[in-house]
Length: 84
Image (cartoon, rainbow, N blue to C red; front, side, top):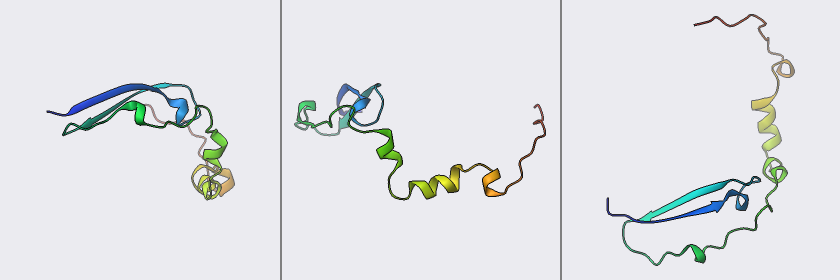
């Protein structure tokens, strides 16, 4: 396809609260002066799960989408599902 490809294995702990290596692949149609060392990655393990979950609006969104059916006054079936 003619792309100029650059790839690198980067620890996900720079961006999310877990240590998992990711393969990052970038491609350009034309040659560019791209260098992985030019990127300033955030420090590892500085992002905590709580900071992602406690953003404005998350609690109301969670209540709307993840609240139990009982708390929303919905009926819950106790029948076994049909086997297909």
